[in-house]
Length: 131
Image 1 (cartoon, helix red, strand yellow):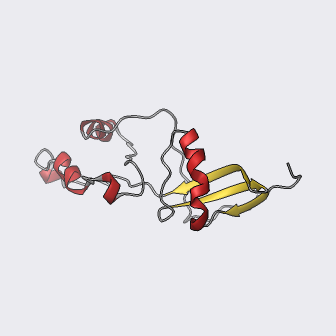
Image 2 (cartoon, one colour; image 1 turned 90 degrees about the vertical axis):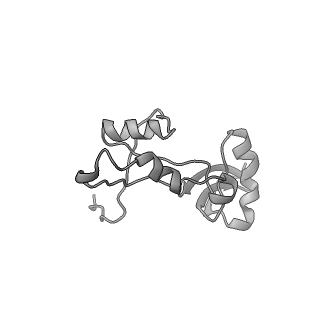
Image 3 (cartoon, one colour; image 1 turned 60 degrees about the vertical axis):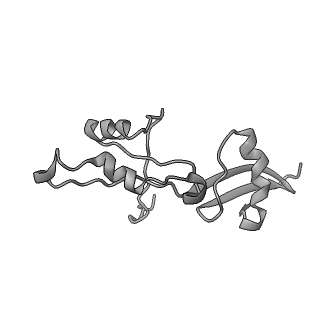
């Protein structure tokens, strides 16, 4: 072990180094086209990493009030949902942030499952105040 860890963005040509770590975590390793990875390295050993990845969102959904009850949201979803994940996406799934019980129920009807935890968001369009 060296005393100082080196922090850097892992370039796409080194992405294969992550494969055994993701296998150990039983997690999906996204393609470098849709993700970035920051690593902390001790020599050639990855001591830690943080992945930033694009995740397709099935949102927003809008239906004109005059057409509510007539527009089939499941049909809209089926049109844009990939049929063959291996060819359509660089990630293994989709997500919806359900801000209302109605949207939660719609997500459930489209085959989504609720995951434990709390969603946090950081709006990069707003400058953070200096402390």
